[in-house]
Length: 186
Image (cartoon, rainbow, N blue to C red; front, side):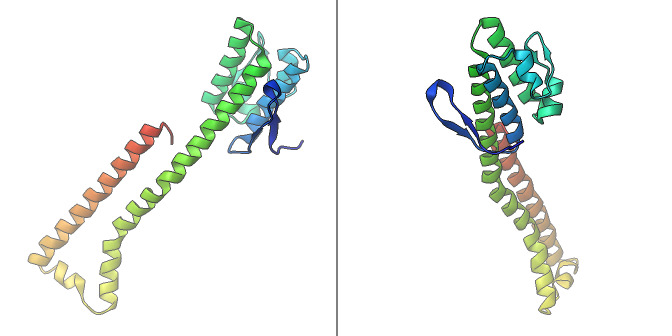
């Protein structure tokens, strides 16, 4: 079965879901919506994706196992299908909208990870720069170990530098964690 970009045609508009981390999952949801649109029952539409239904709503465990979605995504798909059934909304349209929302969430998560990759790499590099400086100084014959371990000013400055490097690492990690939480992602 071909798993490329999926064309969605709700309300006569052409849209495309680009393959992402769970493109197969989105493809499965859109295929179930297409089956519903063509007149299949919810049980038959989900059976085409090897997902069992309870009263017209797909089972979350089957969605996770068969479509490869996360538990939260499976819960959203099942809840949307149940709401469509309860409210009498067209289930195909609801599932298409859920697929679009899941795809938008994935794009946002990828954008967050990409945006935070630079600060994480910078923090890691800054942590290792003092060590690299000591190794480079030793390679050039400057004997930085003797200065750092002489028991005097060099030792005090070395200890202060190590504490400041660790404090900077913690501060950078807190900033990245805060940005991650603010974005609501990994």
